Amino acid sequence: MEVMKSPVVVSGGGGGGFKEEMKFESNIGVDEVRELGKIGGQTTARDGDRSMSSSPNRNDSKNSEQENHVESTRAEIGVVREENERLRMILAQMVKDYQSLKMQFFDIAQQEQSKDSNETIDNDNMIDKTELQVSLSLGTTSSGPKKEEKMNISNKISDEGELREGLTLGLDCKFEGLKEGSTYTSSENSFIESKEEEIGLPWPPGRVLKNLRSGEDDILPQAHVKKARVSVRARCDAPTMNDGCQWRKYGQKIAKGNPCPRAYYRCTVAPACPVRKQVQRCAEDMSILITTYEGTHNHSLPFSATAMASTTSAAASMLMSGSSGSSHPTILAPYSTSSLTTAAMNFNPTDVSRTSRSLYLPSQSISSTPPHPTITLDLTSTPSSLAPMSSPFNRFPSNYSSVTSRFPSSSFRFSSSESNAPLPPSWGASSKGYLNYQSYGKSQLGSFNQAYIQKPNASTLVTTPTTQHSLTDTIATATKAITADPSFQSALAAAITSIVGGGGNGS
DNA sequence: CGTCTTTGACCGGCGC
DNA sequence: GCGCCGGTCAAAGACG
Image 1 (cartoon, chains in turn brown, green, red):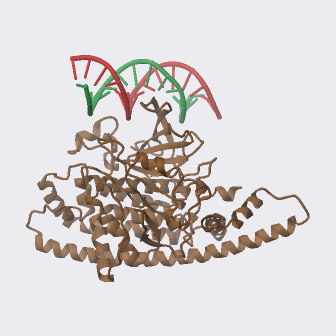
Image 2: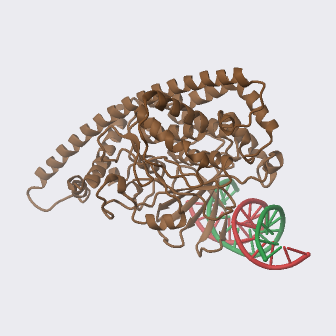
């Protein structure tokens, strides 16, 4: 049934025409209700789906059953519509909060600047204050040259407007996209690219032509630093994941330690796009496809590719920002959602929308000296029905143990609106080192940020149950965290994309 | 005939 | 210096 394969998206409203929006909302309804049924232990919705998908044709009560299904589906659609409305309100609140925090940040930055304009800044917090700094310091060690830092600071001043614009571009464009639909894709693309360029992800667009072969390192002072990679583990029977991009295979190798060949793909959407990906089946579980992305697209992406691109880019940005501050770049990122992943990847056979409802970001450190800093997005979690959990906060994938055995660090968890927590969802930290996405209130934002604040000092990042701060402290904390960690901005934007932006594909 | 895939060769980094 | 290994190139073949 096609509806079941459709990605779970939340309509941003005003996206495409009415027809399309209805279609999306309908899709959500089915999927979301399925999820709710899963989470809450109710199976009626799913059973209903199955009945629908299997086209019951057994007895005389068929018509009445179908009518019941139609009614229930309508009811589900209504529920989802309400949820959409709530999400929109949440999003609006997030925008407000973000703008407020941003303004506070710039005020603080200006004050700091007026104070310290002539001082040498060797504080890491200061170093992390701007995206530009991160951008320029990425690829250097944490003890990078002070001169560069100074220059970065001065550049920061001159480029502050640009930064602000870029920041605004990122989030606002998404929201614009939600409103205008048709502009969504390009907006997000521009956001992704600009953000990635700012944060210094590998293969920035401007360097593309020099990166073919061995050129890029020649022009980068931090040539010794490896490119960040984002590895996505997902169950997929197809040879490669359909992530929306066009890829051309340019090589295949048998890598050591894995009998399955590793295929090398290059993005062919644009002639000089530096993005490459490696695809390899997991040796332990052949059904798991490991796709490793490297680089940044230097072109606009089809919408179907933007979700994955934003996911990987934000994850990479987290990784890079973390690695720049620590010699052990162990980054755990609360990030993305099932809706994002399902929107990003149209795996044909084993529908990930059903098998991957949460995203785990375990430690990227597999070896002590990884050749490339890599962050792994594990989408191989199995349905909760296979691993029933008494608490929504304790829902781990059945193969989690294997994941954690490879990645000993604990993980953030960032699940989507599938959560059975009362809607609207809210940000909050759960026990057991998992960060659950539940709502977007200010206090929850503070909790979220707390998790991030721990990052610089955490070789193994574990979220701890957060304590409630006063509103002032929370805002200050949030401001600090946002400004100190550019990856948060990417994550926030990508999260929004995953939560609501998916509905922006009404275009 | 153009595009894509396959596959052996080649290159550079890294460890010993 | 040597060998291993990951990554890439490019010629040849396959395919539509």
